[in-house]
Length: 236
Image (tube, rainbow, N blue to C red; front, side, top):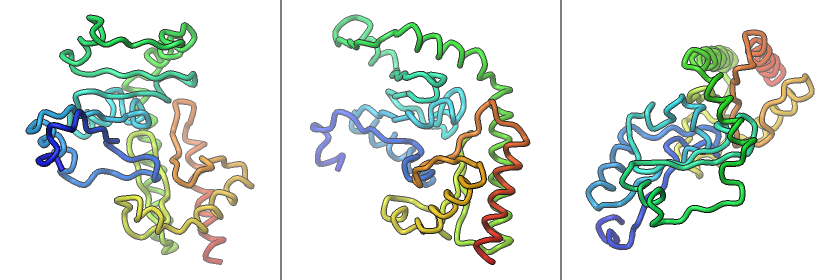
């Protein structure tokens, strides 16, 4: 595709970790290969980190995975609960905005309330706080994975940063076709089971849970024990 259409391709935009199919991690070497192709054919590489920005760490998925894009898009978590989006990138590209060669206008650009939200995030999402949230997420994933093994459930866990999920498939999901083959019946039953017991996880079966700074050990225990009860009910 690159070789045949190099002069027609302005940019290549990709989610470094796909999070609209639960969580799909990139195959080893995939992003590095994309970076190499973009460099070879002079194509701008853009990472869509709307869902991984901040939740994968202060420097996002690009830093965690070791592949640097040319431009990046951000939103959701960076606003601290307020509607906010941002983009940034290498100086040679951003200079087009700062020197006025490319206009960037928006009715809500620099909204004071949204700016207060991102300032609050900057203050409270310290490295220590994020590390604690990520450790809690890892604990939840490991404990739930152990329950899956114990009850021989057709599922597996996937996590990235402070996000995690249970995917109802015995094999990793690598693309949309794999995702459509997962067991949505059990997934929906699990969601309803938890909801009726006061555990509210994301309603979309393509979403993930997110461990926030407000969560602690008690909430992790609730999440894990609720899953154990579901496993018992499923096998009973």
